[in-house]
Length: 232
Length: 232
DNA sequence: GCTTCTGTTATGTCCTACAAAAGGAATTAT
DNA sequence: ATAATTCCTTTTGTAGGACATAACAGAAGC
Image (tube, rainbow over all chains, first blue to last red; front, top):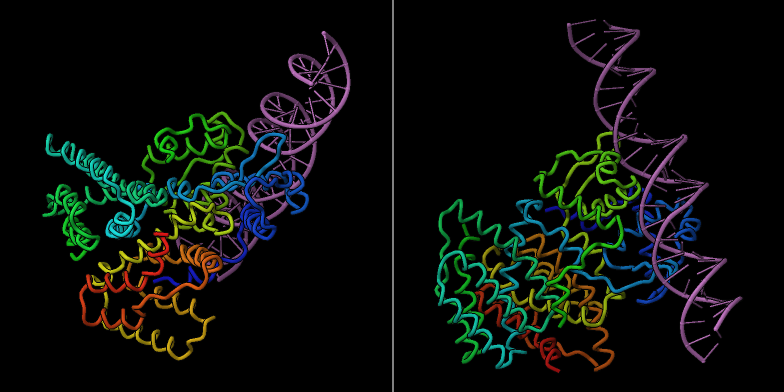
């Protein structure tokens, strides 16, 4: 494993824009700006850093993409609360990611799925259960193949929502395409994928009567085919 | 909850750089470039898009920051495999994030910690156990306060490493500062934080003799103070 | 006092120019 | 003829200037 890459940081960002970006980030932190504060203007930054306005704009453009700053004409730029997952969204494309990363993310989603139990039992409401039952009822109605993925999303999506954790929910949703991508690939290579013995219906039943440990065991069984695949 | 923001996407990115960035991303995907492929030169892109080279450079600068492209003089630009967590790293600063997001991340880390069990039991080796025992042994030697955080990092860090999932490990490490930040805040407000009844030493013992469910139960007990805090 | 108009100002975009690096081609030496 | 060296070309990186545009501020008019 490449620990070096984590411990040592590549000194001297080659390009000016990189350096300015880093400087700006450091500047924001040091001055302990709070969201809403106004930043110096582009030209002032350029002068202070001794670079052209062009370079400053490249760096600002990056921060703007990450949602760290918001700029409006005349008013100048203001610091904003970044959307931490927004940047991930841009990069999380199954077609671009390497094989190892894809595998890592596949596993990561399994981990997240297994971790659902505690938060769900902390916050589930009777209405949630009803909603889940509705979703499950729709599943059995049309058991055709092409709809399976939709039902997976609906059911598991509802589970994430029940955690009341928005970041968690969005994160899971983002990971889904990668998950499916890997799944499709595996199926294509190793033949049809088995489905776990514990169904969505079973999981809802557990939610109604069992405790969080029961639920986790149920989820483990539900995901068993995926875990088995990891062993191979 | 703001579902709109997830379902509907803000049409027409206001600035040209935003549009070009989006177009470039779409272009890369449509042409199904693979890492190593060369991209058109800046001027060609500018001409094709009907914008100035400056705007193109801003967009490219963003992709470069995300690690999606790598540019070398003369050679042009080549597509690379992005470092998905690199972008997260830039934004994940406790001082900038909002209160809700901080809370979400705190919970997310608990979830990830609870999900450790399955991967660990899939891949743990006798050497790993030995390493853990060494770490635990060093803990009892100096039980002073200031070192507690270091030991937390050492112990849990080793656990992540045992999963063999690099992305998972890095992700956890990135979440750590936020976790500590929230923890410090809570302690400051609500007084001293309790420590779980199950210690690191106990967890190692479980790893040696118990199964993954035992370990998860142990971890739950280890983290119990944190989970209790969520209820309040 | 309220609306409207105008001017100022900072960002957004374009253009041109040039330095530097990195291939490629041409040239020279063995 | 092949290998090494030098020169040239090309493409990115950076600089600086120019102007459009939007948004705010203050003045003018009702």
